[in-house]
Length: 295
Image 1 (cartoon, helix red, strand yellow):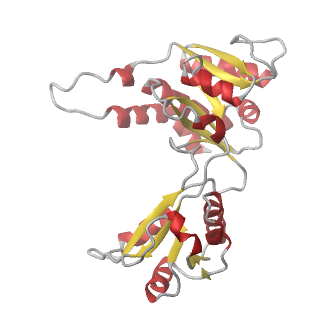
Image 2 (tube, helix red, strand yellow):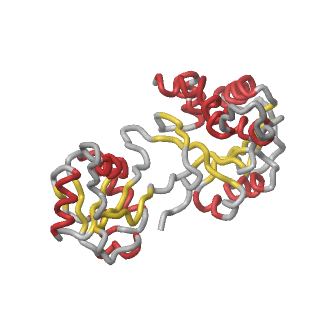
Image 3 (cartoon, helix red, strand yellow):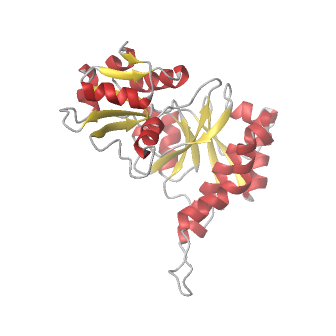
């Protein structure tokens, strides 16, 4: 809870610092106009049976919808309107051509506009680890070079944390590796034990959460290099079912504010959050490739 509240207050500032960089020299480069510019209005697509002009309010709108427009307008300091769109494809086209500024897209509608549009926010479901990032690890001498070639291999999973294991399996199932996702070849041990099994030839590839792989490679002591004889052939997450997306050229300040405001909705405005993201427990930032299927 506190993390999301802090994100609303500090998120935009931190994002701007990271995006624009810091320069202590007396004479630095000219300010990044994309970082200092801001939107002068915000037009958001909403699903509707038929298209209609963008509007800031409507007598038939549910109370949370009206509150959402007011809340965003107050926080952004600009006029906010909702734009009815008959389909996700229509919303994607309008977003790509600059007729609107944000839309909830799925993988199909995003695919046609991905060169000019990127996801920024997605909903997270209850009792869910989220979109677990998994990694595939092989020995340096392995013939495996990519995800596609690993589908017929003998995988080694770790069962140390059943929740993480379930998330890793779900990720592998979503990226067209059903053999890896459904395999019963599981090593009930730690990361070092799984890597030892890989080196011994008990399996062809270790499948684990990417964070577990990173921690393992740090070693236990100074100068310890446990991954020199291993290599990563793939890392990825399952695609999001849908994600709020914006144009890639949106001013950075506005992008940062939008993210911070939405991250805090479940704490600050739960009724708005439940209307905007029904069935979710939070809205979280997401990577630019969140709607793309990893291959």
